[in-house]
Image (cartoon, rainbow, N blue to C red; front, side, top):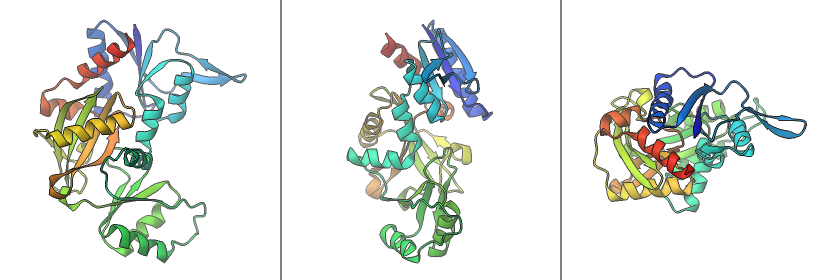
Length: 291
């Protein structure tokens, strides 16, 4: 058995590189030859109307990138992808995540899809601003549909701020979300592998409404309640994920509310906090499924 870990062509973020190195180490410890390559060599393309692969010899690919075209091409070439193209796509587009989880009765913050604009000179309708504020209240969260590490997430505390953010993002896919004040600056990250929640931590920030580790948040050990465990597993299953990082907010009365789901969540901090070998668990699940 031989695997390929495909990483972004350009990223040099240490937590990003840690993830691929840890997966390679655990797979090879299990006897699975594994390569790490950047997604810059056109692994699969289209020639003369046919899907043509440059990935001969690989039984599977762990896809740690967000290039949706390449993930689709790899699957069309007949190579097993972890996670699947569909699952990655549903997580990469955060509004699609909302829609999918809503169809499965999984609690998320109330949300409204953004209005797509094709004219940079177009004016934001005051009726639209009013409706969003009346429906979701202030502050309101505005998110770019595509983004990670807490980037592309904004908080509008007033009508003027909301209008400004809307005007800034109007040419990009985005959406609006109710602010969960009871979870300001903190959430719970749960790692799900297969049908099990294997590790968790509370993330907390002292200076930002976002708790992301890459934005200065810090992981803390926390006991995972049955409610938080169940919603994490249900969210991963609804999205078709073999491996998932499920970010859960503390809703009213401490009830779990899913914030986002990540198909290739970093696990360096959660391994440190929890003492759980996340990379090993993921590697074992991949080998189990392939066998």
